[in-house]
Image 1 (cartoon, rainbow, N blue to C red):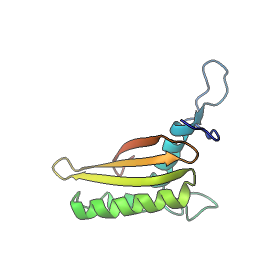
Image 2: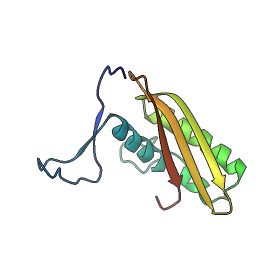
Image 3: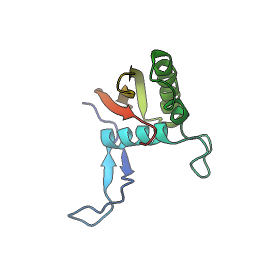
Image 4: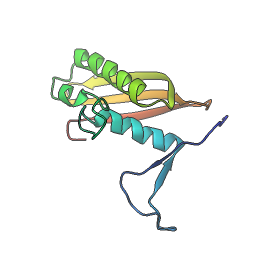
Length: 129
């Protein structure tokens, strides 16, 4: 795996590191997965001073979990990641609707800029995440 740089974010859980007592940090894959989840689950205008950050998927999650909603969710998730997460490249989003269980699973496959490996990130989407 070729690494040009390391990506670091602060964990939004704000839990102290048990050894150092510092706020826990996330690096590389974990940092970017967390950033993707935050961008997708944040509604536009919810973040102060950045009204364009986020996605509109929360309103779509109250729709029927059918194939049409799945296609719209795929498009919105892809748009959100491309707009809000510059550390991601070669992005593929797949949403599987399971109407019988009223659940939606989103799978995001991407590469981190400067890395060779593809990363797969799964998330069950619900309006209460």
